[in-house]
Image 1: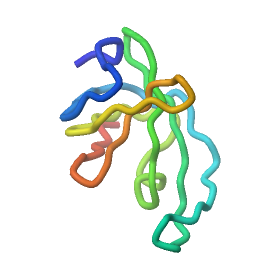
Image 2: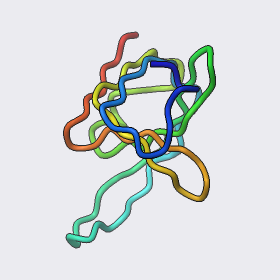
Image 3: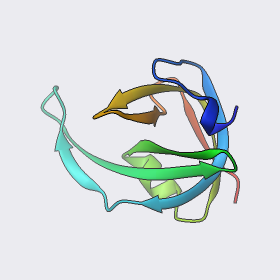
Length: 96
């Protein structure tokens, strides 16, 4: 699937792309009172780009310029912007 084809609310999304940029990780508190690291990356392919949220160990797996695949992700909208989420059942694969 191409990034330009993803729509808010889609499930079972699988895409391949390149990491254009990654934010510095920050620590957030979950609703379960647990501190976790989170970062955002921009993934792009020849059709466009999308923001993807990375959690904990996912952050350490990737760097700018890596070619990645995300399998079984889902799409949400936050502040009017589409976001790709890997989630509990999704998978991040680094192809570099």
